[in-house]
Amino acid sequence: MTAPPSTSALAMVADPDTRGMTTLANRVVEKIAARAASEVDHCTGIPRSIAGIGTGNTAVQVDAVTDGAITGLTLRLGIEYPAPITSTTRRIRGHVTDVVQQLCGLRVDHIDITVAALARPTRTEKRVQ
Image (cartoon, rainbow, N blue to C red; front, side, top):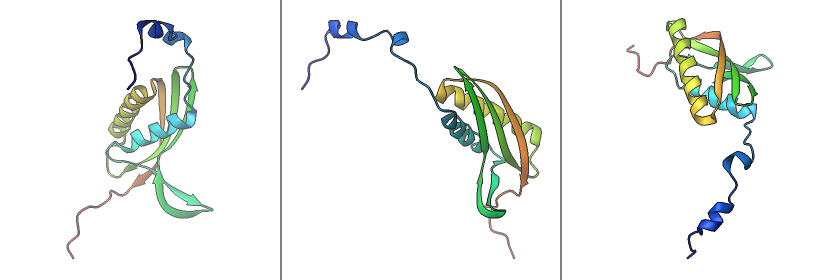
């Protein structure tokens, strides 16, 4: 069993401002933003393909540019048809901003969204034949 640190040991710990700096790679911010966007109803990814052949996988594509504590994001995604595009992208923008600020501690300066696909909604119920 170890003894709790003495007050003199705690006094020797450096001030948080002088300990160093935490840097997040743009790729980390991109993955977090892509996951956050995919959590919003009616948001889908872009179909992936290799040499023009569809793989069946979809993903929201994100590019991030970070400068200090500020980031700008560009998203390419799909929206389920017939969901309203304006209100859906507004909800995506708000949710991604909140999640990136909460998890990364970055201020989101802007989010550009390109709706590159309209997707059919996924059916969870069986059709009667």
